[in-house]
Length: 302
Ligand code: ADP
Image (spheres, rainbow, N blue to C red):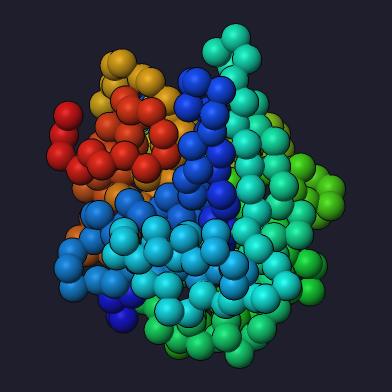
């Protein structure tokens, strides 16, 4: 297997309140978070790449510099003159965060529009990682094209990991989201949902039901996260449950699932041991949620 971990998706500009009436600019996105943590967790013999589309303007350049500084390879990223990055603003009211988005015309929506460029980037990958958000932002025909490209990459030996990350507001409607996510699961070696999303949008009775539904859709392995509750790991005919260690002093649960996925996959790709992979995933996520923000340097146990 090629030792390249390739994440595909959208990285946005984040404007976060500084506390003094101004905003601090950063870059964030679910698949980017996973790539960032995978880079920290995988050995030196692995490379980590990000595939997306950005503009040719200054803020797009800054985002690419940010990825490069994190040792994430951006050589396959598409540059589009007529578009730029999506943006979101975090607002605080009485301690509660709310988000406003400007992403409907973002460059990343065109990430799968050039099939040749897409195929060329997938060609290099051993593990391809994407999420339901990656699919949600694409025009319907590009979703089909991306899934075809993933099938071809798999036939050529790559593995595919997918976090459904169900966000109905990004899709045309909830039914399309469910249909497309189910089809995508059938192209995947690893499907890594969070039960809270699955119960809300698929109505599953329990995490085991989520796992069985994705296995029936054709997934190779399903890993269902559920906050502090047991993580379910299932393959056809084999289901195991692992209890994450309790975490105290939880400060901010942003990127819990994204970081779990990175450490789980990094460990599993190396050891093929499910129990060790859950321990790594839950260990990293447990440390991430003890700090504010999505990207936290906390590889060693706190
Ligand atoms: P998401 O961020 O996608 O909603 P979850 O909330 O299900 O993901 O959490 C992902 C993982 O993070 C869990 O499987 C667990 O390992 C860890 N985690 C999240 N919340 C807690 C918590 N309250 N206590 C301990 N571990 C947690």
